[in-house]
Length: 420
Ligand SMILES: [Zn+2]
Image (cartoon, rainbow, N blue to C red; front, side, top):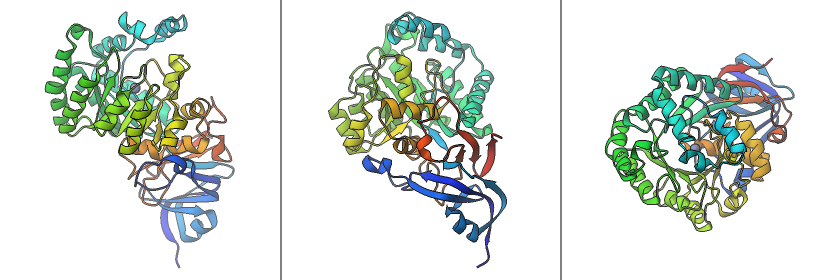
């Protein structure tokens, strides 16, 4: 048999490790731990797509390539998918960080006009170009750390005009950047100061004006709500998610982050694709999520930055069959671009194994943003988003932390990061 011509072969990898299960359903329970692991592995790419995965000997006897990458001593895994970021904002909050170190809580700071509201003021003042520039800079760093697809939420505009401006910035950067960006409308991130005394009027504005105009302009795929004491009540969140759904926006919920508030239950009830944070989720809420297949997007870096020592009960979620994904929660109070750091925290604070954390950062994360048919695992027929890590096996993920293990990033079949 003549060898088939392909564009790229990555070969002689010490190990290739990937979750598998194509695009059927997010992985749950023991499936999260069960990776496909190939020693002395190779991967073949043609027209941006993976066309062969296996032992180097079998891949190289079936294919010949225009370009070859030697991966001796290295580990090949899928590109990271970060399913929860607040990518688009202006300014920074390093002063507030120091205030928090002295003991002020997140909600104390918000009540004094800091926190989200400071970022809202700065984001409203910024131009669409400035915001696009900020997003581009962040994506550059994320890509170097191995993230090839991110979800990005609006939520620092909080007017129809400024929310649309943020989502347009996401759209511009997504078109131009190597990293693919999936947009989420989060107009219900905080009650803006001008609606402080009449929050119901702000909910009216979201459902009557923001959602229809944003859906019309095709600026978002998902609609998220910060359902929390001091933010949006369960009733308000339900109304926003239902109207979003009617306009074609799939529900997501910031749920039970700071208090037990019924967010997990709401996510299950509204058939949300995911519920995020879940530090205080009730057992009943988790059981409902498990039944409906709602993905728990866990954000250990957000817990780390809150300094409350409270983390989501990931082991219980896995026992209950709730699928878990991991995200950075990149935002001005949790400023990390690194999914590798998230994995290190997930191993230590959520007691995930490196294999579970890898599944949660790739295939399950792709499910959480409705991209599992295209990305999230190294399987034939998926897009060739591939990382080559400078370590001999996947167990180094999380084990070594605070340094960037990425040696090469291949996005859509092209070598886009190459650390010599
Ligand atoms: Zn968030």
